Image: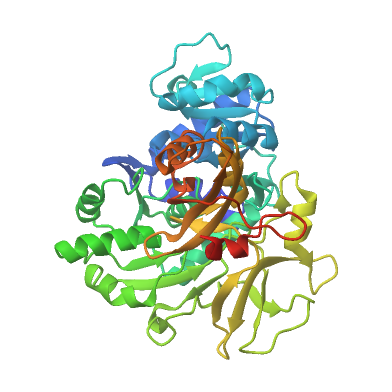
Length: 517
């Protein structure tokens, strides 16, 4: 495919549909949809959005499960000239309200079963002028709520001719040390480059059938869709890994060739494999990110995927992917996450900004077209991550993570310079969980840490001290968190202490929590 046909992110859909309109683009929970059907639905939605007032650069919040309407909305938004942001359907009302207001979203597109979450906050999100609802329509007198299906009833329009490659394509919200999610600004240019680079090093082709059971709100899940459409391949889309047997049947029935996962998924599969052998010979590529894939499980993964190349990778939302390990090196360099992805450069600097000798630890920096523009409405946080580059005016990404590099240019993760927790493939801000804990009546102090966990990557452990006379159980605290947080953010363990350790200035000393427990 010539790059000239992929200047904009949605060009891939138009090219793939023109080349093979009758080919299956998606299999959504067993139901197939062709490229022609996807293009037609997306253009109909784009026309409706434009008629409803969407202007170039307007944000469209997509609060949906992994479904056909979700995919249609992503491409419909792009074709209309808008900027999409996918919100995890597990997100609770207070965070959804924050994201809508932070992004200034003009449109909200959601599922009927989530109406109980989004309807109560619409009055507090004044930027939202139109809500499209897929599935069962809720009973409400809101004048801005319309059926999603009705939006597709009109004629398809033409793609917006006002968008250029340096315009924003997406805001990808990720947790941060401030406690509130940050909107990573990604341009069409950055995302089309990234999709092409991923395809190149994963050695994918149009005959691939890529499984995605990860939320499209998670950039790892989103790029399975973008790569598949860019290739003209087929995406097998599932809502989650909640029912593994269903996923295993789908792999077999759809002859899946690419299996992207996170350590939680692989550890669950290994547990099932130990009870009764699993084997998926159709799979040719297995990829892992979000947390380190333990080297000692690779032989067992090869039993499950006997014909697959296994890729270890490292990335961060602010540039999607940083590096990958050639699968041929997974035995000789079992602890490495590899070298820079095609078309990019990585290097290590000391905290003072000086080059780091080979084999020594430094902070990873990234150059490339895939680096974010910055965080939406967060200039100070943007400056913390984007540093002056080697060329005048250039900005490079400072990962804030420590690595060492060997003589072959392969990277080895050493630790994080912030306290973000990566659990179940998701990034969790301890402050956000702590804010929730502090809102529970009876809780006096709370602190949250990530602790190593073979299944989750990191497990969330909460340390809590109670107000005098208060009585709370671990079960009650977890239930209170479950009511306000996504499931993956709920602490796995709650440790009760009479008082949390403090520094001389009165701040909670997290490094002393393990000893205090």
